[in-house]
Every structure is written in structure tokens, then in C-alpha cells.
Image (cartoon, rainbow over all chains, first blue to last red; front, side, top):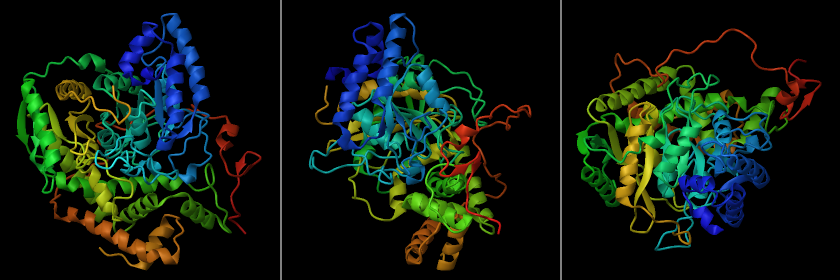
Length: 492
Length: 95
């Protein structure tokens, strides 16, 4: 039965259709794996009973030749999606005990397509972090180990670290993530997975616990490009309940994987080669360029001149939006409440007890940059630079079809190996944040291993709503790279 | 920009976040460090650049002014730490 957990999403889908196994068998194999791997701390809430109920329904549908695109396929749901009747915590103490009376649009879409949700996966508190270490429920362990030091516990990246660890450890076939500045792509890179953040507006944000509303996007995290294309199709779509949801046609993303990228122009931005970029990452990137050339694409040297300002821009815009979004946690309507003598005292005590350090830091910065006297100097200035960053991409896409960069500056690091300076941690997202600010689709795929045996990822960036080209190129690179490594004990 | 303790205390109050006095010194350093980091934006020439409020190239959609949701007070109150008779309960605000 363990073999069922090693299938790709697409292979499991085909196996169910061919009646080689049942959805209940598939769910049971994954539930057993999930229970065995509790040491990874990938799940906040396990829902095996609900999963088996759903799997039975899927089997009934499949028996009749019916069922959706995700029918009977076990997945993990990031605990940032509100799920009706199932606790949704954002990995914050302030939401402990919160049980949403409604279902987010994306999770509803997946359920409608037949997906079997095994549980809610861990994340950095309110998706603010790049390591999963800011979760109120403890860090998540990356199933990958260093060759030189297999005992060291590594981070899975973040914020969608629980999803990444669960998919990499074969506890689920795929999982949902959300990405504000790299929260799908960086953990995908750290865990040897494919993760795509679609264009802003592709996935409805309704029912996703908000962090920075002008940046947040949901997307799939999977073990292959085909799986990502397939699952993405079941997540996206126009939703009138999200005012920024785009009214665009939903293509058949899987059909875009034609294998033919001849004549495609691939931008290689020179600003993504900062001083101090490791030789290992440089080589990974060079190898990726060579793969594209061999497949008939043409690398083009491009410039995105405002790249170095993306990180400071993000760390004004995102905290500003976060301070405003998180104002709702006041101890009145849901979640934690710490009593006080006055209403204001209750608010202040509740929020002090409920938010962790990183969230508090971002609320304070956000409040400051939005406060009278500083609004223009910080917030408006950042919004202006954001436009320049977006314009850089728009200009580049006049001459190229897709852009290739590294996903993260390093492989997964060890829990507790980072210093106390928050800015150092933020540097993890230096290559993913510009894409987020511009609202463009970005995908990370694993193309190699570090000298210490850890996965490394490359990022493909596309034009707005052109996920198809991104996926098509990723599919070609995946085949060329032949990345087949898995965490120790899970090979083959 | 380097912050001082009084400013951090004021920001914390605006954000309704209780901060203990013995945490202030650390926060002053941390937040000043972040502000210095983001202040490199000052070197970018943004004359004549319109602020970007959204990447979505669209007008805010409008809908008819009709009630489309509601009528389930029990669901609305289900997660409240304290409620009574269809209302959220908070500490007394008027003497």
C-alpha cells in the first residue's frame, strides 16, 4: 500500500479512473503516512474521518464514470484557507478555536472537483515568514537531510512550509499554498517541489485569511509540473466575492504542456546575479539556461533595473496592508480574548497575547508607515517604486516570453541557524518578491541538488495570465533536469 | 530614521498592542534597523510616477445595492468569545 503514496497526482488520477485502486485505499495509504510522520509537524489539524467520508463519495462517483478533475485525490490544505466546520488558525494563537462557518472559494473549488482534504497544514504565523519558525505551534521539519549532517533539522521554508513538507514526505499528493512574497515558491525550492503562484486575480482570495491583500495569491504545490498544471485548473476562476478576481477565461493548463519551446525567448535578468550569489546557485542557473538552449529556446540578456529596491518596497507595502488587515483581531468577534478594564485595554492585551514577534513587528512597522506625517515619505514612495518595478517587467516582456532566475539564494537552512536580524531572514525572498509586487505568475521547479544533497530550485516568471507558457517551459526543464531525488527513505 | 521609545510606544498604542516597558529598548533598535533598510528607496527618482495601488488593471466592480447575504445571527456569533441575546459583549464603554 505504501506505493500509492509515491504516485504523482496525475498517475493517481489515472489509476482511480482505471479502477486499479479505490479512493478509500488511496486515502488510507496517505492517512497512515500522515500519522507516521507526525514528527515533521506538517499538519495543524488532521481530518482523516472527513477524508474517508469524501473518499467514499468519490468512489461512488468514479464507479458511475463521473467525478471531477481532482476526484478522490488526497491533498493538504494550508491552514490559511477558511474551511467550514474545521478549525482555521493561520498558525496564530489569536485564532485558536476559530471554526469558520463558511468555506473559502479556492478550497470549495477543490472540493467541488472531488479533492479529498486530509487536513490543514502548518505555516508561518499569518503567512509572515520564510522558515515556518514563526508558527505558534512550533516549527515544521523539512524531510530532506544534509548528506554531511543527517541529524540536523532543516526548515521547509515558508510560509507554506507545512504544505511543502507534507508533499515532499509523500503524506499527500499535493497541497495548497499561498504566496505574498514567495511563500509558495521558496518552500517549493527548499523541499524539491513544483510550486506556482499564478497571476494576481487568477485565484479568488475570498475566505483566505488576509495578510497583504494587493499581493496574496493561492496556488498549488506538487511533485511534478503536470500535477501543478492539473491542480491549478481546479483552483482558479472568477469569483464575484473577490473584487480583484479577474474575469478571464480559464485555459486547460495541462494542455499547454506541449513540450515544444522552440523559438521562445527567455529573459535572463542581470540584476539577479548579486555580489555574493553562491557558485552553486550560479551554476544551477547556467545549467537551466543550457537546458532551454538545447530545447531550442533563445536566452536573452535583460535588465530589470529596480530589482534591488523590491525588498525595501515590499517591507513597506506588505506591513502596511498587514497592519490594516490584522486590525480585525480585537477579541470581540472571534478568537482569543484577554480581559481588560476598558475596551482599549482589552484590545491591547488580547493583541499582545495573541500575536507572535514577527507579526507584531510587521504591525508596528505598518502602523508607522501609514501614520500621519510618514504616509507620503514611506507608503506612497513605496507604491511609486512598486510601479517602476512592475514597469521593468512590462518592458522586458516586450522582448522576451518568459524570464528565468534562481528561486532562492540558498538551499534549506537549519532550524536555529539564522541570526536575530529580521532583515537577514527577509533576504530569502529577494528573487521572488519582485514578481509578487508586479502581480506576475511565478513558478519554482527543482532542477538540481546542492553539494550537500539538498534540492535547489529555479524560478520561471511569465506575462500576466500567461501561466501556460510558464508551465510549458517548466515541463521542458523538468524533463531535461531529470530531477528524481527524494528525501532519504522515500526514493523511487 | 531612528525611532525613540516614546515614538514606539505611540505606534504600539495606535496599533492597540500592549508593549511592556522592558521590551521597548529592543523594539526601538529592531524597528529603527528596518526603517533604515527601507529608506534606501529615497535614492530612487519617482518624480511623475503615479503610486501603484493595485496590479489588477480593472475598475472596482459595482453591484446592485441589494441585500444578498445575512439572516444567520447564530453563525455570526458562533465564534464570539462572549455574546448575549444576539449581541457581542465588550467591556463597558460609557459610564
